[in-house]
Amino acid sequence: MTVAPTPRSTPAASDANARTPAVPRVALVTGGARRIGRAIALRLAGMGWDVAVHYERSHDEALETVAAIEALGRRAVALQASLADEDATAGLIARCTDALGVPSCLVNNASRFEYDSAADFSYKALERHMRVNAGAPLVLAREMYTALGETGRGVIVNLLDQKLANPNPDYLSYTLSKAALDVATTLLAQAFAPRLRVVGVAPGVTLLSVDQTPAGFAAAHAATPLGASSTPEDIAQAVAYLADAPAVTGTVLYVDGGQHLAASSRDVKFLTEPADADRSR
Image 1 (cartoon, rainbow, N blue to C red):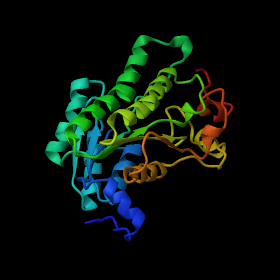
Image 2 (spheres, helix red, strand yellow):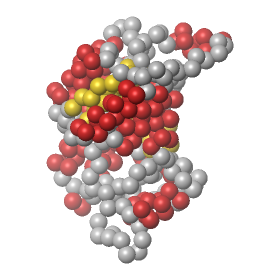
Image 3 (cartoon, helix red, strand yellow):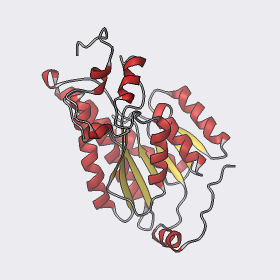
Image 4 (cartoon, rainbow, N blue to C red):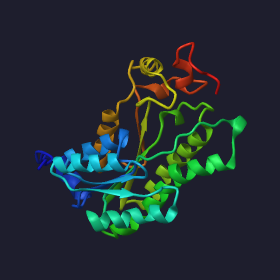
């Protein structure tokens, strides 16, 4: 069984432990079956967390991730739900509790990411993004706060996007929904303290987007101030740090190679594709 190393006893460590009562190390990762979510789930498992792996359609990948977590000596369960459905979303905390225990770490990783612009904006597109990207994290936070009870302590990590500090009008509804989640991170940190810490992680270019070429993806990485953006493992490392950082709440950690420092008029995908790539959108 993988066990997180015990830190050497120091006054600082003792103070941190006093601020954070012992709680079961159970994490719920939305969209945890694949891509960044899988990396986060495995990283947390490697640090001694039991993990509930939420998925919507990636059933086989969810079972594979559960098996990988169990191979690390931790307990795991796959939980299916549509985050567009409020009742199904609210039920995830109780289902996690029944299977593993009350979650003391919630990672809101799942995200809807569809292209639209101001020219073709619609209520329907905005609602689709808001339900999954902002509404579901708020519902889960509400249910987790209640489940922990007055003496419980936990942390919520919201996956955001570096473009919130470096805005451009591409992916309009997606961007608006992530902006709402960014503000919610601050509001929830205020409303739910001291029971819950609420923080954000803002990735940069991490994985290939739909219609993005490998050459364009490589160029987007190279265009960042550090010459490379984030990997899934970078994001997982940031989440793992925040999960065990008792003095940190209400803040966002940018893990993007400095991409948020460089102003851009369009999404980087459209600025770094080869000249013969489709730029029709």
